[in-house]
Length: 120
Image (cartoon, rainbow, N blue to C red; front, side):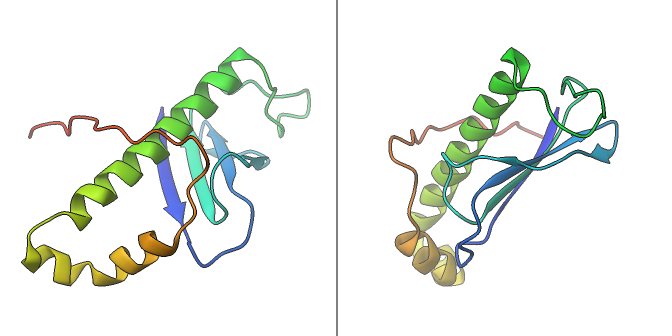
């Protein structure tokens, strides 16, 4: 399973997941529990599709993958907060990010957690 998160905080488009199975992008799935402007591309062979092979079946696997997307977004926020608390040199470089995150609306009940970064 691989994923990519894009968050355009200026966008008013609803959040969505763009499922990818075997390199083919399936029909977008709305994901309204995340803030507007969030797009998550999630590649997984575990997506189950309908008979037309375009739409994702909303089953237990779908819910597990959506939960994983939500956790990854929370982790992205946590990492961003860590950057904002960085030393002054780094803080000056990420000034625009500080402003953007300060103005962004996060979904109610979002849990910010620290996920260990893999060591090289």
